[in-house]
Length: 273
Image (cartoon, rainbow, N blue to C red):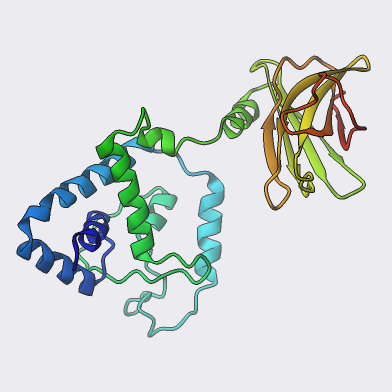
């Protein structure tokens, strides 16, 4: 085993996610190469930093419903390891208990192997390497990057959440002829407005979508955005929205309209009054 493989295993060990075979290999490598112990410390530090950067939140009620829906779909085989004796209810793991709001006692159990996901193609080693890269960011101190910044949600998502949490939150939805569904969200108390799209075609190469507040038939530029591969986007409108504004979207050159006025007819319009 080389040092790089050991560093990957050290992260897996810190996450308590190694298979029995990998755990043995890790312990043997550490015993034979005690000077590699700095990887162990680095891995522990990164796992602790990631944990500290995530604030605990109260799970929504839908989590409980989703959990029991998942349980009801499990095979009801009495020989299944998910059952115990005459207890016909599936055993819940720690995450399930957390979703239910319970505080389980940590059971003593053997470390089990974590297999790769057929959907994603990412096995444990790939995830360990990803976590190790976060450790490198912390250890090497690249710029002013922190773990909390790495995991920070996009500004548009934060703005949308703030709008939805506001007591005066409002929204309006429009469906375009091409199937694009656009929903405008706004809140006067927060002073923010966000457009959420679904099914929006990708613009041509060198083009982008530009947002506009249309106020008394006068368009006011409000930023640009591009949807993802599924046509989804969450974009903050820059500037102050006024009551009765129409939110419009045009196709413009990358960077937005050169003269600050729309160069094409709107492909999306959402009336807010």
